[in-house]
Length: 181
Image (cartoon, rainbow, N blue to C red; front, side):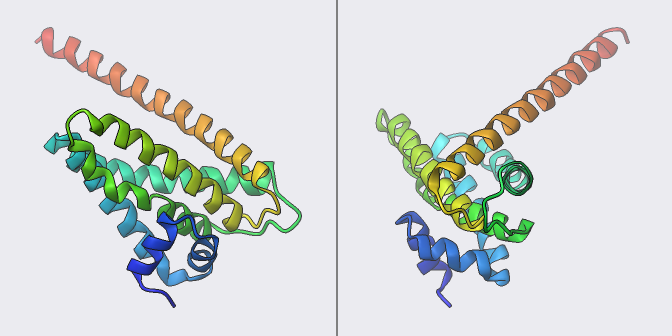
């Protein structure tokens, strides 16, 4: 069994066998959560905003769990492959390790280059997620994994818009109630 460090490096190298290993190692769930949390903290520090660190860490863990569930449903119910058989833990572990490049998010604080670095990390994680989905859902082809990622992303964006709209609505109602007092 590889160490956390070896797994992080393997995930960052987009090593298929690393994703396959964490898919089958139930004890790697806490490691995946640690990768997500550390990546979110690194990205928050890289943004240069301290509130980004706390908010990003909490939001990162919630988004990881929610995205894992969405990918599981899309990948096993809507677009299963011939060999698809996965559970929440398998998807969560692989998607958690797919976020390993975000550990370099602290580099986003570099003036001028920060935006480019964050963009490169985003693309890197996207590629890692496709590999993670392909392995977790036991797909024979990468195209199906890409389609699952795109559909899951669209669902996550839609859900985010609903949460934002609900939060904005609540904030406006609260402001109006407060103004009426």
